[in-house]
Amino acid sequence: MNRSAAARKLKPRSAGKPDIELGKRIRLRRVEQNISQSELADKLGVSFQQVQKYEKGVNRVGAARLQQVATALDVPVTFFYDGDNKAREVESLLFLDSAFSLRLLRAYSKIKDQTVQRQLVSLMESIATNED
Image 1 (cartoon, rainbow, N blue to C red):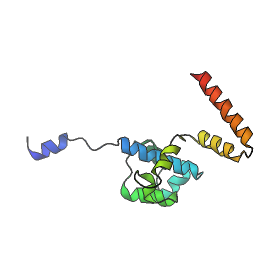
Image 2: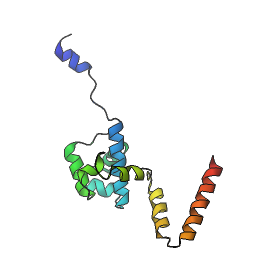
Image 3: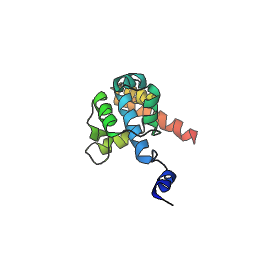
């Protein structure tokens, strides 16, 4: 088999686990900033479907595009990678995979009475236990 035939048989590199994690971090920051996919897409000059693909890890985000995303979301590029001081903070927030989760957390943080906070947590835990 000659070299060109071998090259044709190689599959192009597809998105993988690191791309999915990167997409989760993009989504996390976008939701945190209260920016819609369409608004981010406009800032990047792409369609909102493309932003969806980035966030789901279906399409890979190139270095230049990642810089644009970081600028649009007002974070350093390192925000999207492990190994920096924010890695633990980001990992702990990745459970916020929906706008609803973030709304719940924001509402909870507005409650000033610690007794009410404890009661709410107890209620949520009770509901979760009954779901099992």
